[in-house]
Length: 297
Image 1 (cartoon, rainbow, N blue to C red):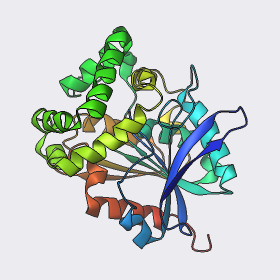
Image 2 (image 1 turned 90 degrees about the vertical axis):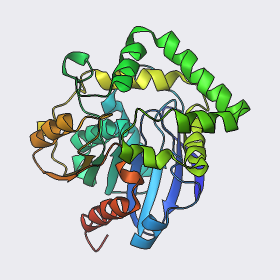
Image 3 (image 1 turned 30 degrees about the horizontal axis):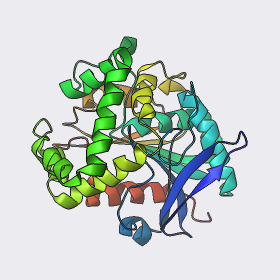
């Protein structure tokens, strides 16, 4: 695997990393909030075995990507279009996980002529009246509220996370494993080992690389009106969502999916938020996407 940056026409840079089969079908991956281009410590054997070229790209302000003040969800579609042009991709598919799902939906709306499919995994959903839904877990609701009402406090919290990860990694690992009691059983199982937490630390460390500002700014952006209606999306959409997801509440995703004209839903009983961390589910997701690509491409 390799990671680089792409320079856009306005001079900004977009960070990316490639996994899987470099000659395979192209799929652009959008990370969660906060997040970075780094998905795995090594290459993705599932993507490689299925013939998928997985290109993970970072949104402005995360990792290697230049910040863009006052950006919108739909601005991301323009960045994605430029990135695809530089990769010489006429048509491709996209995946958005968690907060990245909202940006995938924006691309599905704005770039329908260039997309074979858009996949939303444990995706964020629109906030009615700008407020987090009642069914969202308390910790997430509080974070969204503080991002908007007390951004200085959240920035201080993220800076502390960054400091501990950098200076006292063993403490961070211990604290993370002890502090995941608020998660359901499905999600806790992906944060049980030191290796699990180290992978998360690598991912978050890159998210914090430039600054922690976007970790606070992006949740506020997600809580604002998205600038389009799901009913206007013409791209085929695949939804994968855990029925026990309280971070991105399942009941809200059911409403959103029902409003998308061409939408295939895959709801997983008992699953929480970390759906794509399950290797079998990840294989099914990539397999479904591969089938959406014409054979000649």
